[in-house]
Length: 170
Image 1: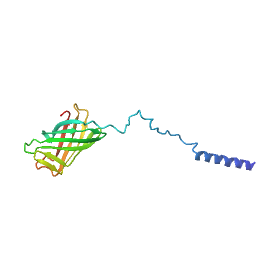
Image 2: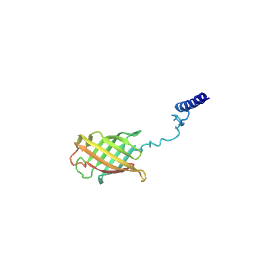
Image 3: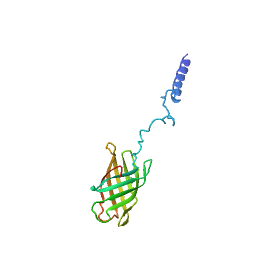
């Protein structure tokens, strides 16, 4: 009889060990099906604000102006676009234009020029334009405010950095 009780006890322990080892007592977790969440928006990815088109406003001070002509938005990439700064000092070469690309988000943008600035006095290679801005969607019309900077071999007398405030349309 003792031998039978010992065999039953060992068998019961072995059964419990096997049951836990094979996962019979594990928690069940749902697995994501690729098509199961198609109808739900991706809360992590807010689409970028649509900057396409012409935006105009003040630069550096209320007497200086800037126009940004944003090209197509390819996902969050701003394709070839142009800037045109007009500074009010009235001297020759106070109108600076150039090309830029950049990135856009739901709340702002970053712009990087192509290392050339064009003026009536000529082309200045090595003059790098950068800027960033934030969108104020609560204003009417929508306003983008930000900062710009020119660095490198830029025209003498050029306002190298400052703030801008733009809205649509030009």
